[in-house]
Amino acid sequence: AASIGLKAGERAVARVGPRKIASTTAPVIFENRVATQVLSPLLGAISGPSIARGSSFLKDKLNKAVLPTGVDLIDDPFRPRGLGSTPFDDEGVAVERREIVRDGVLSTWLLNTASAAQLGLQTTGHASRGLAGPSGVSTHNLHLTPGEGDLDALMAQAGTGLLITSMFGPSLNGNTGDWSAGVSGFWFENGQRAYPVSEVTVAGNLIDLYARLQRAGDLEFRGSFNSPSLLFDKVAIAGK
Image 1: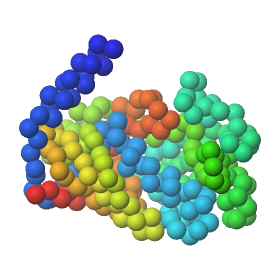
Image 2: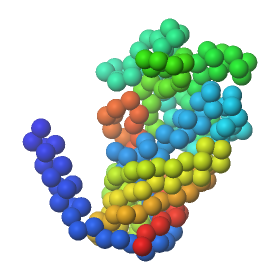
Image 3: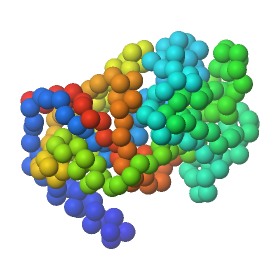
């Protein structure tokens, strides 16, 4: 608990006196604690209901590359002590460990029985029910496989750019994949944090961004969706 408090204090002190930066295009790194927020639109885009409606920017991508070669996105409902571990989905269907993306290629939609029937397919065991309303879909214990090196190595590789440590107010056009989000974090130069920044927006098309994703090796299992830190080599940054 003391180390957690110390880290929180260090993070707070490091963010004191943030600057605004000029609009530019530069490398952007999403720290592992927030990296899933840039990946989560992928899940909505491959959900059965979105595919059945035809309202997904990935609707033509089944069995095609959506991430770089060597990258896997794995849903493991049997991971020990996983927050989403379960033998069945919310419709009572037995679940399986699935490589949703295998070697960069999208291998499955996320289906419940209703969307599977609409698409003429079998459910994938991803049904999710709330207290009211029809069944939706969700994953169980999802993670993006890590690359090599830590966050510092990723910053050294990028040289100069923006390290994002918090995100808010994301906006997505589900049909095109055009995406933006408000962010704060640190500007880094020569691979070293230079100063904190705030009131910044990053934007891009997710089909393009996902294809250029680069990973650190700092995957940590915290919740039901986990990712290493991610680097995108060229991202539009809107500042002052």
